[in-house]
Length: 416
Image (cartoon, rainbow, N blue to C red; front, side, top):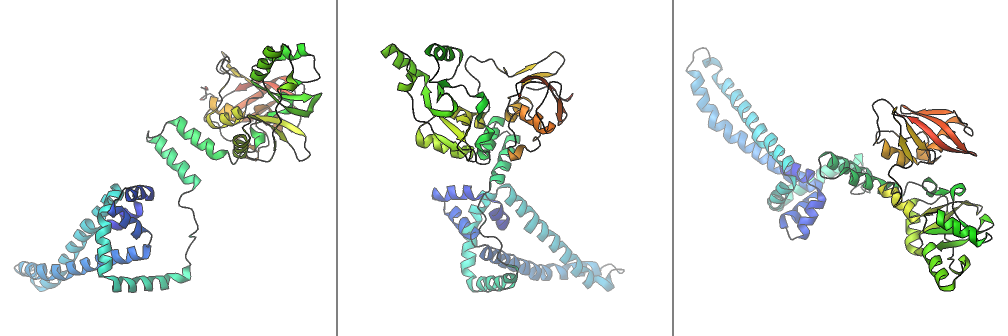
């Protein structure tokens, strides 16, 4: 019971109990850190108990049972042998049930409690039988040495184990499904490159200092962003970023719209960095927008703090944006979906959909990108692609970009 409890007990719970002053938990941690000593002590106790049961049990019951069997003439010639076999069998069964199966089952049910309760007596036994335990431990180590020590550098807990615990906790109702999804997404932050969640260069909304002030005012009226890239001429010449609140405050004071007066220096990140590294960059620079560049310094797109947050909690949308504005379900069960919808956003609509081909390699991050990757060329209206029972048909193109898709889900999928 004690060894099963010590092996099954969660180390973190024992550490918490030990930190609170529980001496039993401290003893359990000490024994757990010395597996050879633990097994030697347990085996010593089991051996002593087994020998005692065999010696006293056999002598106490065999003679009495032999006399009973001898009363029957047909059993008398075999009374001694039969009595010995029966006593050994009964002692073995009782020992197996009461000494092994039941205690170990209890140890599995209450591992931390049993570990704290049994560890101190086990330490006393280990101390009392120290010479014998040391002999057993040394012999065991000597015999095990040819097999190696195993990988002792393994971390105490892995990412996959935590994910597995979250899934078990979600199934058991300990965690909400959203909590499990958020934890899983947090683990993915270091695996996803910034390209996966950035706004591509072609979709960037920016303020051009060469533009007429009236055009800039109209852009600000039509757009819902709070921070804008500032360029001169085109996106190849990024000068910085502007907070629309700062721009409005300066205009109210000066009476003029002068973006260059409230411009902040740009923050750049390479396309190869992870989303987690971008988050660290935002924390360090206090910026909320960064420009993604390739190895030649060309701007590929931009990423905002909101993009990182959405990578963790899912699509947030805008305050005045209706829910599912990028996806509309039609009467026939098909969906009209924006080609720029990210794969993660699509999975929010259809949670059962599996990983897209080459998604792990960040070959694309949108449904439009998936369709083009499947086609191997620039898409045209009417082109189709399929994945996991879903059919994707191109309804509209915006130059070389997929603008609208008609998505037909499998019959069992309705979307959320």
